[in-house]
Image 1 (tube, rainbow, N blue to C red):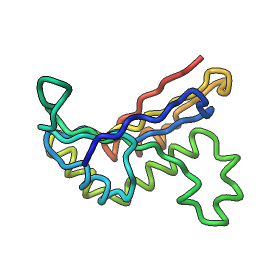
Image 2 (cartoon, rainbow, N blue to C red; image 1 turned 180 degrees about the vertical axis):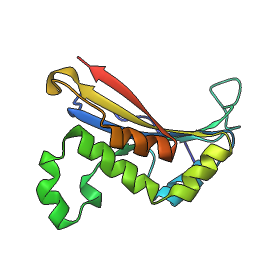
Image 3 (cartoon, one colour; image 1 turned 120 degrees about the horizontal axis):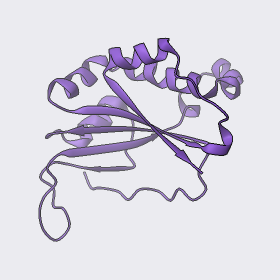
Image 4 (cartoon, rainbow, N blue to C red; image 1 turned 60 degrees about the vertical axis):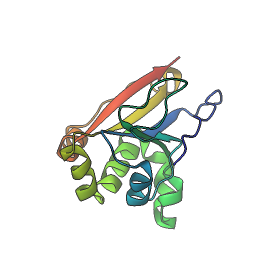
Length: 148
């Protein structure tokens, strides 16, 4: 699978959510198939890296968007979910692939949700204990980036 360039983020949304998986050797196509998501950027361990060297691990990154996965009844309430609701939704969706994610972690891989927020669009933010527990049980880390 060829690596694709990251998309331009100059017109960033107030909330950007991505899923990142790093693994010692997995084929990124296997991740895409298992999660039914297309990556924005990926490469496989051993693929050429620039003019010299090779990638030491596989890397897979996909932007996540709620809308394609929503049922009509869910889409009516999407606007009021907030950051916590969107995160909880994706963690629950990812948990439907629990055995695959567990395999990634058992093979020394890691899984992260990357949450980018515009500083002006978020006055405050609390990660509820229930969501933190769900992330911990899933073995998924979360990284926050606040853009100004």
